[in-house]
Amino acid sequence: NSNAIVSGNIEKIEKSSASNSTDITYWSSPVFNEQIENVFEDVNTNRIFYFDQKEHLDNDPNSDTYYDVWRLATGTMEVAKGYAAEGVKVDDEIRPMSFKGRPNFGVIETEVLDFHLDAVDNDYNLIGNPYPAAIDIEAFLEVNEDVIDGTAYFWNHTIGLVNGEFTQDDYVTYNRFTSVPEVGKNIGSGQGFFVRTIKSGIVSFDPSMILRGSNDQFFKVAKEKGSIEKNSLRINLRG
Image (cartoon, rainbow, N blue to C red; front, side):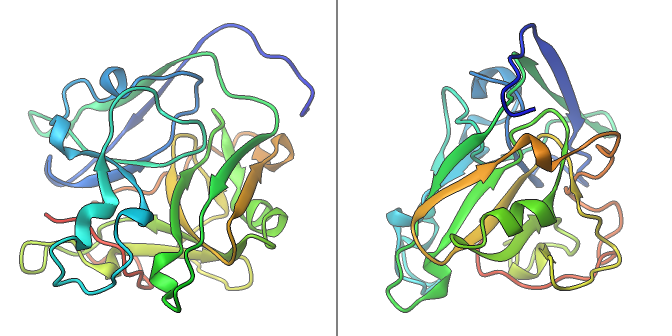
């Protein structure tokens, strides 16, 4: 119900089960006014990022500013925006991340930017599921088809580092017109993902997209490298 009013607090816990603490997971807060320092309290503060394409519009990976799009994140997590953070290794497990607060509800909108410049790699935005429940990614892509290109990109890191860096082949793609057997349409609570814009504008999340009882898929580092078929995206993080 897009007109519902929600009160009270919840706690959402998601384990970023990585092969080691330097693996990255893309997150989005399902609660209002959550703080980076609370969710990622034990994470290296130099390994928590948001994505800002305007910081670098040159697609040459050899450029000194190629990775400047990844900015250090602090403070309040913006609703429906995505963040990238390492895990925290405790013994043989990665410590779960906990989001606590008033759950996000209703129609939620976030701005996405397009820079054109004849380079499609300039048009990516890191956003995320803002609800404390799974959403139907096909419904999301359809509703926003006038702003984004119809594909969502999920970081899964299914292969090892190459020359000390993560690679473009570590993304799983979901296109509502293309069947990918290994991937369901239910995108878990707390999940961050990339979209590519076709113009600057607003993308919307609506409660009608929520899939009840389907919060069982969350893209993060695969337990077995190479276990999921992937498509590529030229967005990178240094290892």
